[in-house]
Image (cartoon, rainbow, N blue to C red; front, side, top):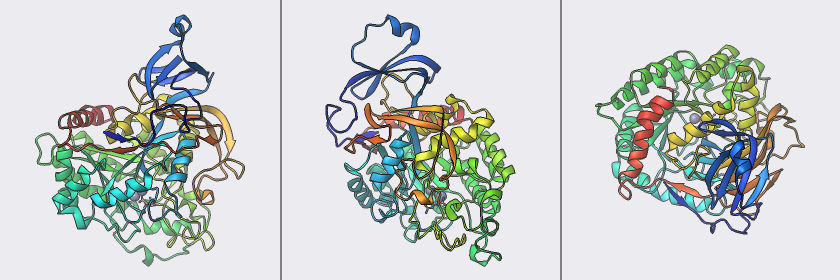
Length: 507
Ligand SMILES: NC(=O)NC(NC(N)=O)C(=O)[O-]
Ligand SMILES: [Zn+2]
Ligand SMILES: [Zn+2]
């Protein structure tokens, strides 16, 4: 992929809190693809250039600065493939500056921005240009972009190809109303059509998988009660969508008419029939993956208080038994990876005053907290550092085709988070929060474990101890058109999907 870099090469500038181009990070716990080691990581010119174990480190003649992080964990930066930053057009909801500052503060070094909730939505080559302009010199971490598959472009192959050639990393579709009028839903024949174009580019289609079976507003019950909302959006919605999707993805199997296409179910909530259908499709060889989000793993319906619309999202948070089943599926490797689905709005549209679950904006605000949340709620399930790195870095990188990211490995971008898993903190008003509207975050008021100490993006120290580097030097990531660099991209993605996503990604 192509990195549109606005800043000059790492130098003594404002992109980084440290003025070094060449340095070492040492720690007792460095998470590498070969396991957790004690030793040092050498960074030069924005890349990882060597990794040495403790034994070799003491023998080494060192040039460059050394930053010793002691017992803190050095891990690949998180890659969040599902965030809505709402820029341009709805920057009062979030925006690139605050959203990417929150990402950096949370150890997220790359995020892929969703095509909807900005205005306009990213559904054409022209609207992608507006996205790119909005992100220029305003992002603190690296940002890629999904395009939208909507009825307007689904049967227009040249429009879709123009959008893909312009650099979106893949497409996103909704099978139910998205909440945004200019991002209408698609049906399965439109999805099929989109997949046939995407197959040529070897880029994925991400799908919000719910089909509206009844009008949620017809539901009876107190709109301030979470159980009313839950009844309005039952698991049968997810199940109906996934049933349709797997009837399409069977064609993605080897030799099938959609071979080369890949479908990804976003934010799976239902751990019953929907999960079983996905597992079955994978076993049969469909090119399909799925994510869930930290909020489905942290919260359950029973604990949501009347009127607390911070927890409203779609699909909804379900009961505690469902949550346990999601954990089981994640630990067993069925769920491919995690993503935030950070989907903020203003406190007014969250209807925090009236607390009407049926009318409030659906979306959980979480971008800055996904690492400590995964760790805090995962500890009792025995989650390891390697698993966190796999769910948040390695697998999302493979999925999005970011071949120089996702692992602390020689030659990769030096995208690194340093954090202290054992350090607890209260997410209260004293904690520095960078998302635009902290009051709508479902995690506010919680005690979490796992504090981010420092975040490096391509070697730039972009965040440390509550401070950001002065300039926003993240790069915009564009997929290289297959027409421009035939072979390479295709090869990498084909390899990732065939071996990686069916093998590494737990198929
Ligand atoms: N328009 C949205 O951002 N919707 C989002 N809302 C949620 N998840 O509640 C989503 O990803 O579906
Ligand atoms: Zn969604
Ligand atoms: Zn979303």
